[in-house]
Length: 79
Image (cartoon, one colour):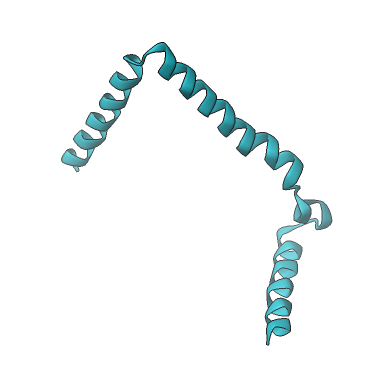
């Protein structure tokens, strides 16, 4: 267990030192990457992946029944 902790500590230290020694160009690239990831995971989720089950059904039992029925009915259509 101790060697695993040492591995993660060394791993984290390497990345911290690497980010600390980045050039201004490298920092700009990482800023662009972080902004793109934010756009992909936060903004696009709001517009293209609405909470269909949360709006249509009130509790988890109803949601699970809907999903179960959809899975079972789709397998019947493919036979």
